Image 1 (tube, helix red, strand yellow):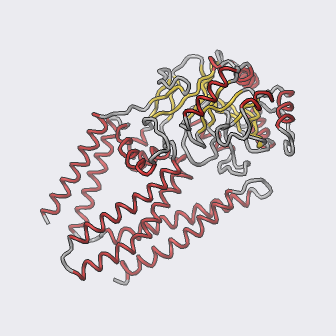
Image 2: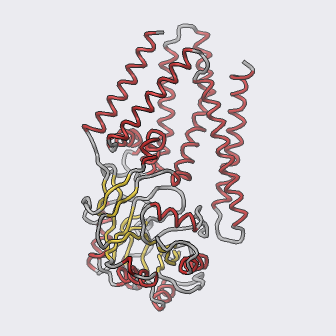
Image 3: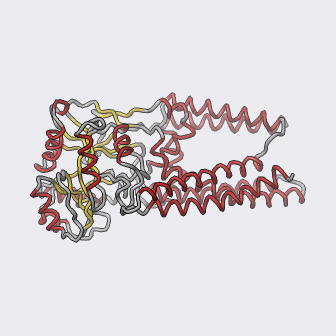
Length: 481
């Protein structure tokens, strides 16, 4: 018994020492980087919530993986690593068991645990994809004098692929320290214009300022910004929609052109667009640098503005991109003046007044060798921790170790008993989230939104299957035994 405890103490001490070494001897300080110069911008810093520090081991690593450049792809490989560690642990444990009967029993229990492990990975994936926006993520600190923070690309539930209400999108931008943002729902802006008018009437606070836009799906996705009246763009050609926006004093940007390259850069310049997205967090923030250089060089040669697109839909990546616009006297302007000032920065294509800022917390990497990326990301996470975050890890590791030792001494619980119970909680989580999305789907009947229906079905069936399986395992391990 003492030998086993000593081994576990050595493991705990080794983990603690590894965390300290990574954090203090191989640090990678989080910073805000200018996307065009690829240099840190000293006018902007990072704020870390006290709640994140307190619960760092529970949510910090989740948020770090959420900010990965290829987040969805990398988390698929997380599942592969779950399999690998599960098999390695099973083999090591099996070889340490002398009794053939006990070894057979252990192998069977591991096979039973495998579907639960997959279900728990799926729980982690769902939390990462749909709920991470509710966690206290790190935010930007604006220390500049005359610069405001704007996003030109975001979506609500009135887009076919949006999962967030207008009110919650406003709160999300407020939390992430934006001074203004455009709502650019797909191929419609009626609801957005109503929301904008409600804010101008004083029905909710004026900061951050909401401005009406639309993402038009033509030969490529175009952001139509500064819309003042309702009109239906269905059936419009690229030329007609751009002319309509221009006639009403608006501006047009090409969104994530590099995602497909449906038409040439010349095609959109000749149509009269004002510029191109140089970064977009819904695709790949660090897309192929040769394509990045093509877009950047083209914009510089042809006097076109470059901006960053959050492309936030209420799920997926947390906030990683800001447009910093130089607008002196911002806080003295009325809402109409603020909107005009933002549009003028884009309209006059003065890149010196618009910086694209990136949240940077890991070295640059490409999509090559993503199989190994979860391991590298895991170690890079500890390199970003400050002193207080390290203390949080040490505190929680000590608490968990103490609980584990005490409960094992009293033989009240075992891993085989814990796993199915945790799985039941995961299954209930799926069912609750699926029911929530189904209720939202009923509220949005008549709109173009279809993701609430799709995700509610997936979550409901996954939850039911997972609940039945974990319920049966819990019955045989906890009750019948």
